[in-house]
Amino acid sequence: MDKFLVAIDSSEISLKVVDFASNLATSKGAELCLVHVVRKEQQFTESIWEQVEEVFHKMAAEILFSASQRAGDAGVEKIEVEILSGDPARAIVEFADQHQCSAIIIGSHGQGQVSGLLLGSVSYKVLSLASCPVIVVK
Image 1 (cartoon, helix red, strand yellow):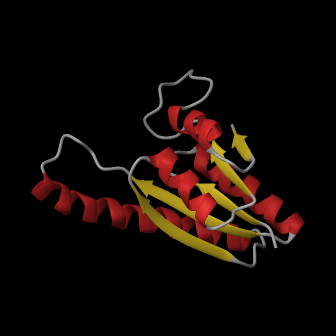
Image 2 (cartoon, rainbow, N blue to C red; image 1 turned 45 degrees about the vertical axis):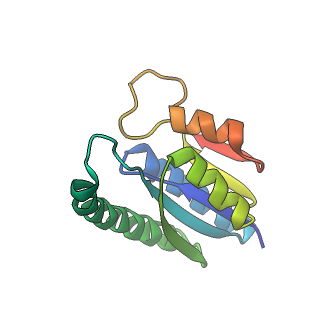
């Protein structure tokens, strides 16, 4: 069975990514693994980061819950969710490799990207690092 890693954040394009991935998974009978990466912000001291990280993880859980409901409503039968930490592109690619994902599906740009960029920095880095096919949704 194919397994697609679907990288999402809180951006509006993530809804398109989930919809695209759900349609593909339904047509192929594939499993979806929805992931959100919490990136450590360098401006925080370690003690402050511990408090902020908890809030980020709660937000990530809400994002993933909503996305999994959306995918389920679209007919996807098997859905996993995972919160990752670290550099977003590296975390996504490492997870895909470790879990033998057939493909990575990611938005062309996410939150915080400058409007007008053709490809966001995370998407670009995933494309260059991934050993499996990458589908970029815009």
